[in-house]
Amino acid sequence: MARTDAIVLGGGIVGTSVALQLAKRGLSVALVDRAGLGEQTSFGNAGIIEGNTVFPPTFPADLRRLARIATKRASEANYHLTFLPKVLPWLLAFRAASQPQRLIETAHLIRPLFASAVPEHDALLKEAGTPQLLRKTGWLKVYRREATFAGLQREFDVAAEMGLPLQPLDTAGAQALEPALGGVFAHAVFWPEAASVSNPFRVTLAYALRLRVLGGVTVSGDARTLHRKGQGWRVETDEGGVDAPEVVLALGPWAGDFLKGLGLRLPFAVKRGYHRHFRGRGNASLARPVLDADYGYCITPMEMGIRMTTGVEFASRDAQPTPVQFERIMPAARQLFPLGERADDKTWMGARPCFPDSRPVIGRAPGQSGLWLAIGHAHWGLTLGPSTGRMLAEMMTGATPFVDPAPYRAERFL
Ligand SMILES: Cc1cc2nc3c(=O)[nH]c(=O)nc-3n(C[C@H](O)[C@H](O)[C@H](O)COP(=O)(O)OP(=O)(O)OC[C@H]3O[C@@H](n4cnc5c(N)ncnc54)[C@H](O)[C@@H]3O)c2cc1C
Image (tube, rainbow, N blue to C red):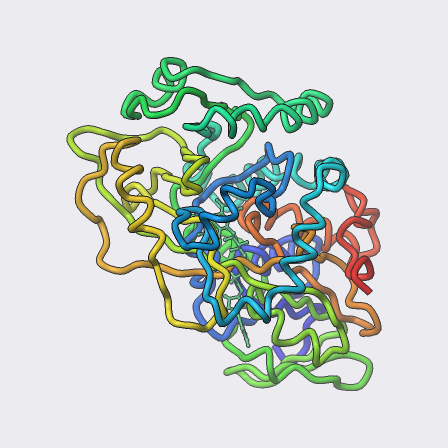
């Protein structure tokens, strides 16, 4: 295994998908992770494949909402005060990217890649022999405040322009889809073209297994040992040094630790998030993920129970977990769905790797021959893993990428 065509550093959903798409195109690939594959950010997400995405998450424009976040009363966001000075430039860039015109531009730029999200997962899960992990049952978003629902009109208009189906529903219409929901909301929107998975961890493992079947190698090693070797690169692993002409950096929230050393000043930050599992009371169950938009949390039916995932927390990636958002969410969540006892004994924390324009960086690393980036997938790493992998693998093998890679170039920040 001393020499391969490509080394992929980072075995989350993004790196594993990239490695698999390279192997499908006949390359010999080594997928290197210092921990277990799929055990970090890709382990604990809400499991939604958001093929329907129109607008990215935005910086709050509403002063009332901003004040609630600032005074730590909001359930959708939390922050560590000491972290704010560090993340301030990023937040300002995020706010600029949240202006209405920029959102419309972003929606159009990202549509082609998102349009392929569900079909790419569908194809890979079938190849991997695990199609049952995918549920094509859509995504339901419920709205308690009239103003929040009224604020969706621009998103509806852009969705209509793009031919993206959605169904605005009243309480009874939403309850016809999800009978266990309490009537605490007046409006809902059903996005039929979103899908979800019943266990995100098993999706990464299924892709890793398929990679091995195609001759790829998964090996334990530390990306910090990466160095130039002749015209190519070498990384040290538990099974010795591995050399390759091409390396892909897919290190999720840890990518930021490497960029400066590679001479790349990219505006990278993390948005932390948490999950807990619950049982449904009585026979209560869900058929699809449900977002309680005004409280910023999601409940998704999973193999382990109902997974509740929180909104964002701005804090240093490695700071102690502070899952205070659950205290703010739980009374509202119990009104929306009959949550029973906890189905786990630990709160999980992950860190979404983010750029302020919400677009990942996928493509060549500027100034570093043979180095490629697949980083910053923010709220959509599960969604975009296979599509990112396909686009990057096509670029790396000299094929014409199936969607225009220009919106994802690192150079947009340089
Ligand atoms: C609460 C929450 C809910 C979410 N919900 C959704 C959702 O519903 N849908 C969706 O699409 N996305 C969702 N996301 C986002 C999604 O989970 C991430 O975008 C995605 O998991 C990122 O994948 P990744 O492969 O880039 O990173 P990771 O999964 O973190 O993988 C990076 C890998 O790099 C490895 N690594 C790090 N440092 C080194 C090193 N020095 N040497 C070797 N290996 C190293 C790590 O061990 C890890 O395995 C959610 C995120 C959170 C936190």
